[in-house]
Image (cartoon, rainbow, N blue to C red):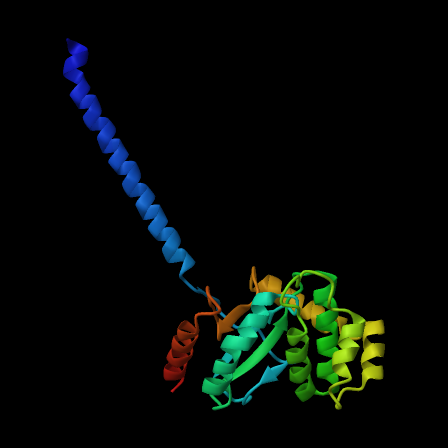
Length: 227
């Protein structure tokens, strides 16, 4: 008799607990979604002195790409978002754009970075041509396979008249740009870069680098505040 009288109470308790657990789960999911859609803001932006940079040096906004020549998403970003950014903001003098090497794919990433830095030392303008052509050489399939080689680098460099290929060969053999690459590695660690491309607008790291509307809104906000 006692058990029968208590059973509705027990059922009510169980239902209450079930509702509580469900609500807690929903709150947790919402918090996770909110966190995933948020941006990370740092007290400072990566120093770009000595880094390959495009645009007016006095531009009030700095956009930095942490990229890897072996990364297919970086190639896609360079083909889709980068041209819009250049047209809307860099070419108009509102933004300067800088590139920092990431070495997530080991020796090939390192070789590409060393080559890029060596070309940059020779001729900063030629760097951006080399940069574009090296990404262009990335295969659409099996991009994880070996393709950044000395042979591929020299093949690309020979198509750019301003590059001294012999000097580039000597630089790669002696790793003359190693300090610049190591500096980039420290910045990757300092700014907790977990994926490529990672895009920063002044001190804010975007969650989704392909969200151009978000990039624009951050830039426009910074431009308004700089007036």
